[in-house]
Image (cartoon, rainbow, N blue to C red; front, side, top):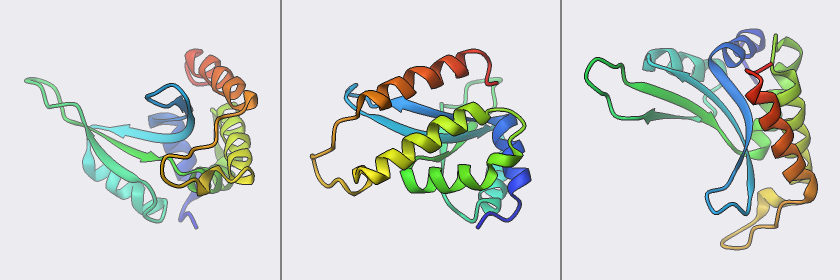
Length: 144
């Protein structure tokens, strides 16, 4: 349960992204919700708001004159679905992206893709590739 869904929604809208990504080998699609910041404490407090789900990663090496950046990332189907469902009504922007990712995650869970083990991964359906293209169109418009 999210402690403050309205705050979480606004932080994701302002500092993050809701997206589908093509896998490194180009054969799969995955859901991602990310929040980026140069202050690690900000992301640690954000993680408390989302009840400890997700992971924080250090991104890029600190360059002279540049701040280190960090990323909070959520990428499991069930956690993405649950988070987006809980914050959807408070998203000031990015509701279209949230709808696409919610549909994608629901479809993936329903098809059992979250249960795949080892090397076997069910292939994405045409709907998944269409959703990937659609979300890239929304995100290339600047996030709204």
